Length: 177
Image (cartoon, rainbow, N blue to C red; front, side, top):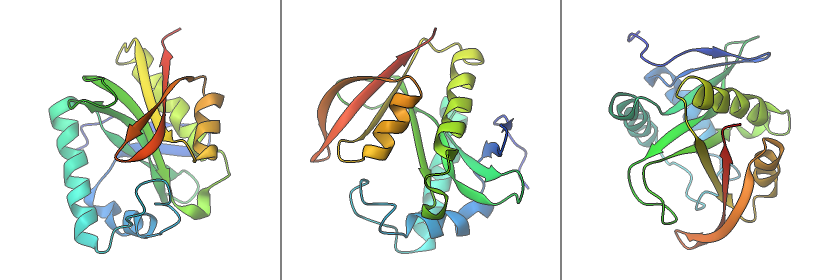
């Protein structure tokens, strides 16, 4: 197993750790599900190599930017259930550049159990308290009411609607308290 370069964070029910190539099978199960991709461009992955490439891309972000999305695993079973974390955007998104974005994605069988909120809180805490970030952004497809609800529950403020790859999206921000 490669040496970990990202922290491991524990919450009441979850472990957040760096994403590894060994997570490819579980990530493929999640990202090949059309329902998971309803608000992500409706383009679920078709083969495991797409996932392997995504994992390599995320791991490169750890090196290049010091942060990236983390695997979310259940403490009880050590099962990969999704990912959550901060991504540093070096390209412009909604007229912003060099920002930290909170994102999450979970296997459908774990929706509605509070895991997104629990994992996101841990990531936000890490961003504000360990990385000393002043603000964190987030975005979601405007039709994704559940994701919008999670962001509002976390304390994000809705800023505006914007076009993201042809879809109306909601732009959120939270500042350090």
